[in-house]
Image 1 (cartoon, one colour):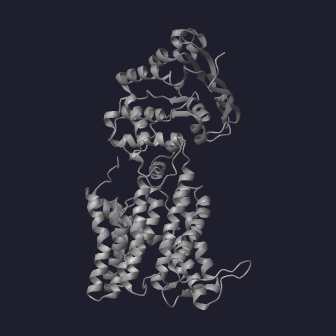
Image 2 (tube, each protein chain N blue to C red):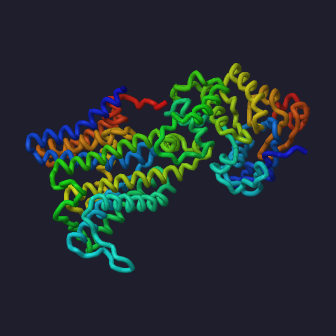
Length: 251
Length: 327
């Protein structure tokens, strides 16, 4: 068996009587894209927060690169190599595109308690940031204010910042959200190549992208994973068809 | 040169130009006003590191201003009465030396900022404002009720403290000292804003979630910023006390916190020279309007209201426009 980079075991989270995460286990292996799909309210965002930090699980563990990161904070998990993109773009809006990317590179370098030398003139940080912007196709917009970017460009910048972290694992929460067909297709192609750099746990609503990209798909319904398998297996699974892909077809 | 650079240069030269003109015209009182503006600007530059860069609305910076003031007052009072501050377990004596007083003021206010920050930065928004206010008020009432150092009446220092090789009793010389310190701190604050720490701190203000996701802890960044901020305001407090040769609990009052905040808001939150513009304008209004009416604060309030409503970047923002990114 290949080593498992991200190993989520028996996670639980309840909000009152609502079981948002109900005994969820999943793994992420090197080189793969593991898609997490499920209807709205299935608990995908809750699960992502439990994996990335920021939401404490009632029980269960998250192991990352052989280390139990369950007690660690969001910051510590990010430093351990968990590169996250947000469902709703989460960027420093007053900054330029380049500054946002440099911020990522700075976080990765860990050398933040420097009070004197201008950060934007630090060659390594700048190069790392530009490399990431280049990869997502934002290099031409580096000097633009982030607030002036289009929605799609902000999504690209989210991915670029995650790239500057040189993470061991990508955790992407609906990177295609609101991208439109063209943008979605471009990003699909990009993520396809990205899996070689680090595996991706991909939460996505865009089924074309999911079926094109995912090595494995897990289906989350009412906080439970009801099926995990390849695209073909998931498409054929009767339970999934009922729960998610459209009841009429299954009937 | 950007418009802001030109404006900053003008503001920077305005204070010494005023002091020199007053010297030429033999108006020592105007020199004192310019000195006061420089010192209050320094207090504002301190607050601006927390408020402008870090987004930390501290309503308790009088705590550090007052601690700096009392550091000077206590050291100088013991020196002038030839009584040691403590004798056991080791001897600590007072001093009339400005550099020593400044170092003590910096250290004491930095330590206080570390403690106050460590507790208050666990809250945010209006709670942070209230907790910092509470700490300021605690020190205010402590100063009032501590008879050893004057209590409500404060402490008078008969002769201004000394600086090796300089005649600090000369108003222009003392202005020079205050101005050089202001210039040095402005230089440092400008570098800080563009340094890795400044980038991360300001990002934490804009979007804490983003900063966490790149592996940086907002709390740590804010605490360090709060300590630097408090130390600078504390240094200003020591200078302010030396200017007046008097310290009183008023330095700890919430009105003082409010005034320091007014300098920053009037001039421009987060703009390097914002507090300089704000403090200079404040002193000018106090002097001109205060001469016309006892109730000049009404006009100040009106001006503040206009700035907050119509010029969010303060005077600097109004004249120089939106801040340009430093790529």
